[in-house]
Length: 460
Image 1 (cartoon, helix red, strand yellow):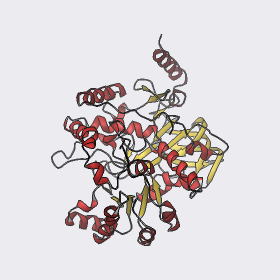
Image 2 (cartoon, one colour):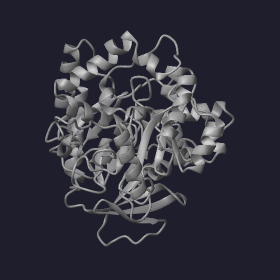
Image 3 (cartoon, rainbow, N blue to C red):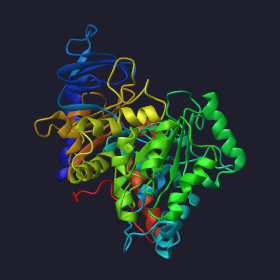
Image 4 (cartoon, helix red, strand yellow):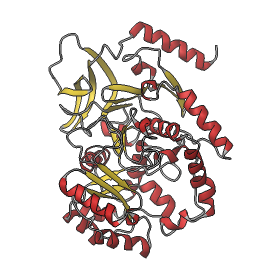
């Protein structure tokens, strides 16, 4: 019996012995080290009822006959990724020979067309958008993200092509499951090229933010280090976008005065250091952003030039922070991936924290070092032990996953030598992980490229 078959046999035995079916388990409790807004509770308990956190604390009220799941690792809120381009994350790493001045330079390179833009366009035209989205969401879950922005989008000709974004991670731009049962009805706008938006659309965005119909608008601005990138901020202001509810992504060219102006107008900032450093040789002026007291979130951009996921990007940010005399405390780094992005997305009352009334979106990481926050900042690739969205476990080790669900829809994968169990078929129309991976591999091979890995296993 080979290693994979032995693992499956062991998993089936565990499930049969310790089975706690999820459908019958609408209420359960998680007990262990919990990271909450009020601090770390070393021996706490979190009660989950119908996908929400009902109570949490050292001695919460636990309903009679509730199944209590003991957690050996550290329980964190699910991480929130406000900057990604998910369907591109099936493509391999792309490295520039040298940093460039702005995004228009690398987007004009023949190598970019050959390696990224043409294969991505061809993949979408082949009808592989849903497979690419689902692969990328599994990649995001492995990186600790339970909510994200940058999903597979509709088109005027195919307004429902992205119905497949229902399920798995929360797609805050097209279907979060927090407001409506309808796809493409989210109160968040994500614009990659905001200066190309028509004046009519710009007015619609401004009016939506003013009325509250839009809770958030996220824009790529100042992506580069030269004068043309710096000029984008002035053009952005001229369009009337400097207002509450808006967040700027990248901002490599932003100056101290720009961050002060952003703070004065209630504008947030989304930092993507790894991609910035690879493409431009520098990242944003985070010292000035912090000095101005701008709300800062952290996100990976995309995996072709950025990080595989949120945990990878946290390691990059932590290394940058160490090299810059610890601009941010460990608790501030935690806020950048939980409460801060929730606030920028207008969702502080629903996600981003382990607290009563919040959605039961959480992750479990192995204990590392003397502080629970070390588990987050010093995590190893693919070391995540459990990912739960809305109370439903989607991904984790066999030891945790068997406590929640039956075996009929279980898939397995191995990443960075770590075996994980997936509970995804209720969100993929019944498709297995093997089927999704196989179709993408075949499609990308036919385009002369290959399927990207789920994680970069060697720390850099």
